[in-house]
Length: 493
Image: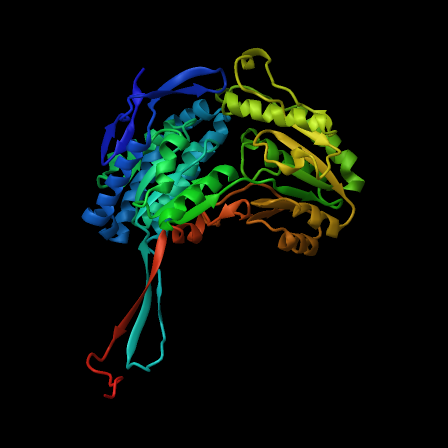
C-alpha cells in the first residue's frame, strides 16, 4: 500500500522517523491507507521551509493581491474538478454520509473563492491627524502575520482545512498545516492541488502526525508567528500555554455544549427537524451541536415524543450508502461516546431512545451509535456539562424566558445557541442574552463563509470565516509621512 507523505518546501517526503500510521475506515474498521507519521523534527523542517519562504524569498507575500487571488481561484476550480473523489475520500476516512461530504467539498471550494475575492478589496485606510509636528499624511495597512501553523480536527477534514488555509494564504502568509492524524487523506489531496497550481516552494507545508509528536513543536517554536487550532478545549489550553514562549498570535475554536431553546409557541415540526440537524448531523461530531435542548415545560412531552419517533426512524449505515447517519470517526471516539451514555444512565437521566452501539447487518464491524435522547436531565449531570461529540442530546425544561436564558448560559462554553419561537421580539431578546459567538433563530447549524465563526468563554477566541477570518491572519501597521521634510523647530536650544 502506497504511503502518503509530508509536503515540505515543495517536495513530498517521508517522516525522518520512517514510521507510518494506518488510516481506518470507521464504517468497517478496515485499513484504507498508510500515511507517514511525523515527529518534532519533521515539524521543524516544515517551519524552516515556511520561514525561508516568507522572510527570505518572500515570493508569496510580495505577490500582488490579484495574482494571489488568481491562484486561490485555480485551487477552488481544482477542488471542484475533483469533487467526487474528495467527497468519497472524506466519507471513507471520517464515516459521514456521502451527501454531507459533498456539501463539505462544495463549501471548501466556495471558501477559497470567497477569500480570493476578499483579498482584492480595500483594506486599511487614511486618517486625519493633528498638525502639531507639521503637515502629515497618515494611513494604516494590513500585512501578513508571517509563519502560521494551522491545526484542524477530524470532523470536517477538507472543510476545516479550507477555513484556515484559504484566509491564511490569501493574506500572504507562509503556512505549516497539520490535519488530524485520524482523517488526513483529503489534506494530502489538497496539497497535491497546491503543488499543481504552482504555489511557491515553502509557502504551504503539510505535516502528518499526532498532536503530541508533531503538533507540539508548532505551538512551541519561536519561529512560528501564529498558531490557530480547532478542537477540544483541553488541547487548546495546552497549545495556548506552549505559545507563550514567543507570544505568538493564537486563534482557538474549541468545544461547546450549546443550548437549543424552544418556546411553546414554536412551530413544533420545524423545531423537531432543526433539532435533529442540530444534534444528529455529522453523527453529532460538530463543535456547535445543539446538544442541550431547553424546552418550555408545557410542550415537552409532545416534543420529546415526536423527536424520538423521528430519531428511531433514522437510517444508520456506511457513509457510502448515504444513510441519515454514518459512523463515529474512530474506535476511541466510539468508546468516549458510549462512556458518556453509561454515565448519564447512572446519574439518573431517562433514556428515551438509542443509547447503544448499532451493530445490525453491515454495521457489525463499524463504529456506529444509535441516535440517543435523554430526558429529565439536571444541571449537575455530566451529559449536561460535558461535550459528548456524538449523536446524544440532553433534554431540560423551563417555565419562563428568564429561566431559559439562565439555563442557556449555565455552561463554561459559549460557542453557539439556537432559539425557536414565533415571537420575533422574544427571539431577539433571548439571542442577545445568550453568551455565544454563533446563534440561530428558528433554525440550527447553517454556516456561511461570509459570517464570522468562533466562541466566547471556554469555547476559545479569535474567529474563522468572514472578514474577521482574514483579519486573524493579518497585522495592522500604522504609517505616518511628513509632507514637509526638514527641521520643525521643536528644540529651541
